[in-house]
Amino acid sequence: MSVSAGTAGVTPDPIAAIVFDAQTIAAAVQRLAEAIVRDCAGEPVVLVGVLKGALFLISDLARSLPHTMDVTIDFIVVSSYGNADRSSGEVRLLKDTSASVEGKNVVIVEDIVDNGPTLAYLQRLLGSRNPASLRSCVLLDKPYRRSVDVRIDYTGLTAPDTFIVGYGLDYQEKYRNLPYLARLHDWVFES
Ligand code: PRP
Image (cartoon, rainbow, N blue to C red; front, side, top):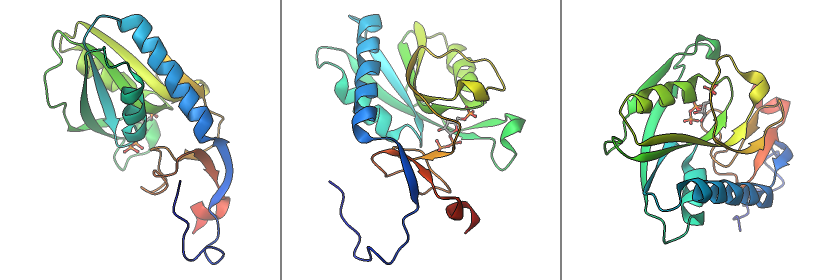
């Protein structure tokens, strides 16, 4: 349950529409977890969350996996495009995983695949380190936006062609904390 703002009624509501509610997200995360269990049963698995966007996804996904499964969690931080235009496709590594992925069954956990260069970069980087297997688990996919081809093993939801915030996704670092995925009013981008 969220805490209501004391200024309710004074601050204009930035949310134009809920695109996927918390229940829909939870069901999608459950399906992702079941698919991972199906493919990785009996194997130790390393979930590598891509920060910051995947913070809630990896948290919910990891807790949806059975306690009998050998699961470890690591994080990687990349900056997609820096200050450059997204079409440049330039991705920079800001923080590497804490542990080596060599010989491990790795699942990259991403909040969204949009143009594709970020996941393509991560698959190249982690794939070059001789993991036993490398899979990618993505909550939101925008397949019609690709500038590069990228393989996704597990997809939660296909997103409409609109800018989405919440459940880890931000606009200027805000709105990540929303428990649902939403579209913002146009005035938010103009203010
Ligand atoms: C977002 C998102 C993905 C990437 C997808 O990250 O979390 O990592 O963009 O874009 P692409 O498919 O076009 O490469 P962002 O750079 O906004 O950083 P964040 O995770 O810290 O929000």
